[in-house]
Amino acid sequence: MKKLLTALFSLVFVALGYSQSSTDTLSVKKAEIQFAQTEIHYGVIEQYSSGEKSIEFTNTGSAPLVLTNVVPSCGCTVVDWPKEPVSPSEKGKIIVKYNTGNTGTFRKSIRVFSNAKTSPVMLIISGEVKPTESNSSPNQK
Image 1 (cartoon, rainbow, N blue to C red):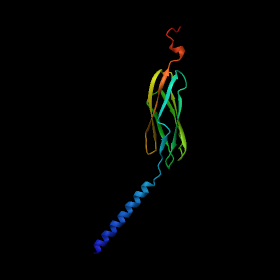
Image 2: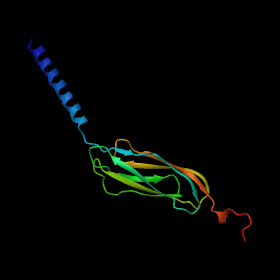
Image 3: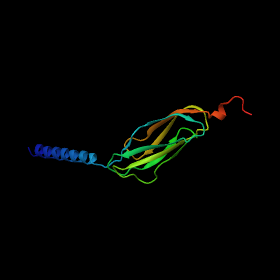
Image 4: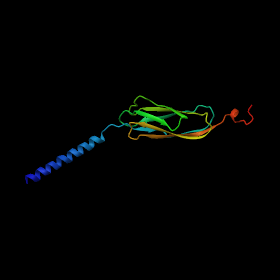
């Protein structure tokens, strides 16, 4: 009987300890990144026009968000991002500059690495660059 009670109490303490540790895990503060949109369409733009777009995000988590790296898929795209932590409920911006010297349609990806639960996040930019009037004339002299 004594062994049965000892085993029963041990089982209860283990169960209580397990339930306590699982609730502790749920209360861990984590950052979370949420973009207003993950696909940015430039539309039709003229060659050599501004290829700059601003992509806004919000830290919807409960801990500061740190962007560790933002990587475009090619050298035709340059990115700038906040190097300081973004507090919970605060917003930040990633500035994307596409090289509009290249004509034709484009679709490029940008990977955003951070300390958020969902990392990396993939952003897509797309559009079409049309040659300017002076560059499209076949009889240029």
